[in-house]
Amino acid sequence: MTLEDLGYNTDFENFRKEQNLDSFGVGRIISEHKERYIVSAIDSEYDAEIIGNLRFSANNRSDFPAVGDWVAISEYDEKKALIHSIFPRRTIIERQAVGKQGEKQIIATNIDYAFIVQAVDRDFNINRIERYLTICNGSKVKAIIILNKIDLITEVELKRLVEKVEERVKHVPIFSISNETKNGWYSIDKSILVGKTYCLLGSSGVGKSTLLNNLSGKNQMKTNSISTNTGKGRHVTSHRELVILENGGIIIDNPGMREVGITDSAGGLEITFDMILSLSKDCKFKDCTHTSEIDCAVLAAVESGEIDLGSYENFQKMEREKEHFESTIADRRKKDKDFGKMIKHFKNVKKLKKY
Image (tube, rainbow, N blue to C red; front, side, top):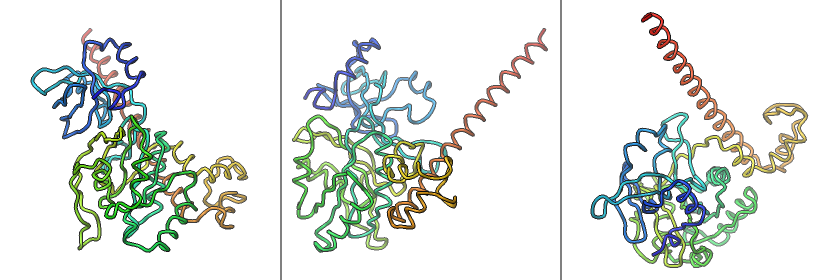
């Protein structure tokens, strides 16, 4: 196996030379387990941890390595290594950290394409698809929608669902598949490009891990059935893991996500809801919030049916989440700045008293 098989390119190599990291080995993080990492390199896979300097210089969780990262490593024991540096990330798929206001959680890095997987038989939700699209668009990651478990509905029902998605989501490829019968998955397999990295996104139980198993031809990830009590998927995939497929593609499986909180993805919202952005230019007021203002072109389009009501409401909800996230970040920065000023003032007063 070569580094190129893992997705390495000249940009990463140029960074390595510019930062004088030539004496270190290079690898890609393929799995993370509570700040312990599995790093895949040319010759082997290593159980790795970060050096103290990286740990103490980290300002937040996103400064730690994540699955998909390229890192500079040194071996210190058999199959064990230290991580000395994280290479610049080309792309980052992230969401709001669950239960932590104003913090982001990295889902995966250096991603080219994201498979947004939805099951058609249970909690099918176009709003959730738009959420995943928004974080992908904000990260400049190309999205592909996969409607799974089509063996559980009729062709007429499937056609109706696809039409609903196409009404709300424009210019995004849609695949309809069944992991059970493997109907349609061959088309996905043939579309995967050599050396490109794909990320599986979706709730628990939609069939992400089974899809990975089918694509790899191996039982890479554990799978389970839907809970009969709740009708929801069980969390079987407990960690993120990168797998190289036989066709040369690279794919990352993720634990199911029931919450997909929006961060400061202004660009993502603009791309996902481009019609709303385009029509907003015709609003009477430049700072129109598209909620109750007179002569609002967006509200007029919703009333006429030009913009889907569900899509409009979903946009407004994510816009509020984005604004709340940004305000939380601003408040935290102000508090940190005020605290820094207080410490500086205290030191100055202490110096004056000393003299």
